[in-house]
Picture 1 (cartoon, rainbow, N blue to C red):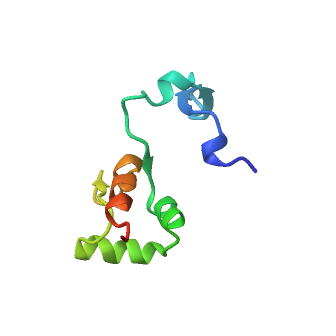
Picture 2: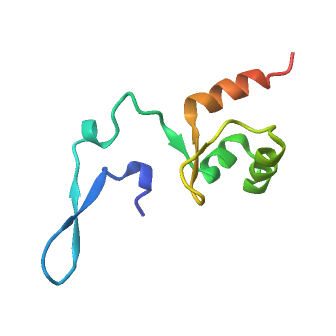
Length: 93
């Protein structure tokens, strides 16, 4: 089984009139520019923090959780750098 993070960056390209797609590899430098933040899913952040995804949902409602980006009405992501900064503010003395 190949994990998504271990797979090369791919994009779909149109092949023929049969409406089939093939995967083509994109060079790593074009997959995500270095200036782009690393975005994490709710499941990834829940694994990192060792909490349930439901806890993250509750934190979003109360405003207690890490900052997130709402990309659409169904898609949200967490910036890895912002998550690290948020964790530093939560450090107990």
